[in-house]
Image 1 (cartoon, rainbow, N blue to C red):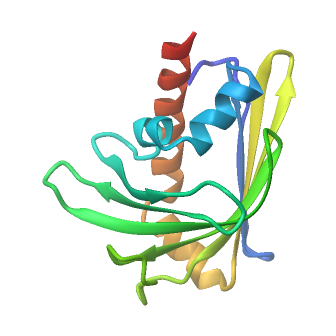
Image 2: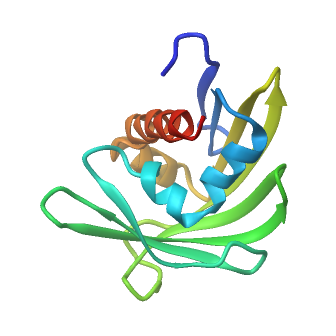
Amino acid sequence: MKANLFLNFTVDKENKKINVEREFAATVAKVWAAWTEKELLEQWWAPKPWKARTKEMDFREGGHWLYAMVGPEGEEHWARMEYKSLTTQQSYSAVDHFCDESGKPSDFLPGSQWLISFNENNGNTIVDVLITFNELSDLEKHLEMGFKEGFLMAFENLDEVLEQQQ
């Protein structure tokens, strides 16, 4: 991450929320595209050496993204993000959960609600990700699995993707 870009990662256990605010050196249009177009999303979503591979993506209200996080040995962990609302280049909300390859929710860990907002800041973009969990134990399990480290690594991948677009 470039040293001058804003980052805030906050865990609010009392309200069962994780809030991540991260600045990117690109316009809102470019950052929005990287979050909503599968060809770009696959390039950064997984922390290296993992990769994201899309099976289905329909970015619209009522649509979904079914994808696998694929490890260096070929192992797959499936997830599905169900899009609930969206305002182009401003925000979208979704429910994210682990699932099987067909999209059937897994009993492994309940889903979480996501609200992702995009705001212009002097030519850069601040992405605000608010993740809400139903139970504190679900939030804690995500953190134990390395969510913070993995998500921040993925954001560094996003920096690289955005630099390549310049």
